Image: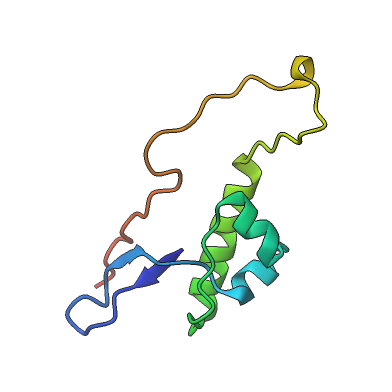
Length: 100
């Protein structure tokens, strides 16, 4: 998730957070147990303070879920799609342009 830094000096910066809130998972229609099985971190202590950050993180969750390729155990080896594992950050955090 994308979160803002807490102090006055750095509150214009965004950084990667510890995990998504339960409300963000609910908005993205991803159950908590499914999120953990997909490798999505969940932070039950975090709260959403603004609607903009909630919507941004829900959008990130939906984008992440659309890029996932889940192969079930019942799939035969001939039917498995050819995919390669990504290296590095999947959805990097970019700094917003400053508005003066």
